[in-house]
Length: 207
Picture 1 (tube, one colour):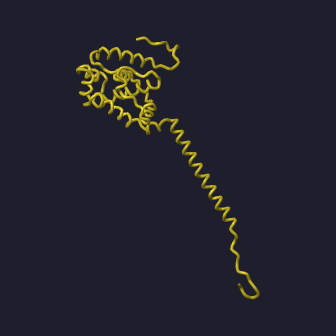
Picture 2: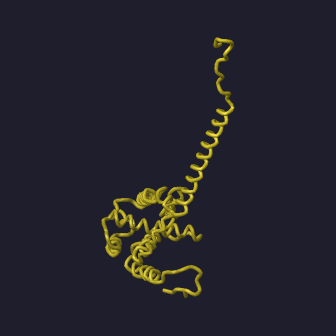
C-alpha cells in the first residue's frame, strides 16, 4: 500500500482510516479471490471496515431526490472519474453493503466475507443472503437509499435550513407589509367619507 505524504495533498486525509481501508482491500481480496465480487461491494466493504462513513448524507439525498442515483450495475468494474460522481459511488456502495448486511441479518463484516467466500460466486452469495437476484438487489438497494435519504435529509442541511428560514421570514414580512398597506388604505378611505349631517332647525320646528 502506497500513500502520498500529507504535505503533498491539498485536501485533509484521515490516514488511519485510509490505511485500514487499503489493508481491507488486500485482506478481503485474498478471501474473495474466486468470488468475483463487484467493485461496489469491494469499496463498500472497505469503507465499512474502516468506519469511513462520516454521516455526510447531502450527496445521497440530492441524488435520491433528483433521481440520479448510480445503478450498482454501473459500478461493477470501476467508478466514475469526476470527483462528485465518485463520491456518490462510494456513498452508494457503503449503503448497499450495509443494506445487504441488514437484509441478511449479519452484524459483522467478517461474517459477510465468510458468507460470500463460501458461496459459488458473488451472485449466488447475493441471492443466498438477500433472496434477490443481482438486478433486483440493485433496484431494492437504491429504493432503500431513496426512502432513507430524501427531502427530509436534504432539508436538514444547515444551508438549506437557513435558506428555508430566510424564505419563510421574507414571506412573513411581505404578508405583514401587505396587511399594513391594506389597513392604511382602509383608514384613508374612512377619512375621506364625509361625516353624517344632523337635521337642520328652521324656525321653531325641526326639518
